Image (cartoon, rainbow, N blue to C red; front, side, top):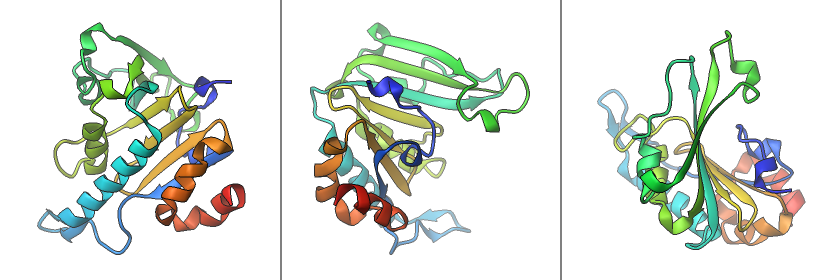
Length: 207
């Protein structure tokens, strides 16, 4: 069984046997200095970004073989452009293997009408070093709050290690794997960031 057996659907943590769920934004800080005036807390965002990068770099080595899957909900008309932000973070994207697909078997309960679907762009045959992963992580943390911004879901699929990483936004990240042993070191090294709500469940598996 390979990573292709893992369904690319949130919540990734609850849909897989072996997974870790991390708190990315520090709970002791608020993301807003002044919501009404649109003033963001830079300290909060900087810590969230540093945490996301630290976790990513702990499980993705420069020469690991990876794929990236980026997906959005579509009303049937809106599609993922070849100039999409995620695709622009891949070196030499014009010569890469990019596959555009649509799906109705994912989030099926949320798809209404016959035209509603999930659009996905998958880039395969990559090395980690071929992708500006930091830019993608930053854009996911920013969401719609500031530039660079990114909505939708971006799955980093590590074929070498047999794991998938999904940063939801500034609040949380899931890392799931085919084998418990794959995540054991990450569980130990980044234990303090494990989401409190899921800690008991995670400890039962990895302690």
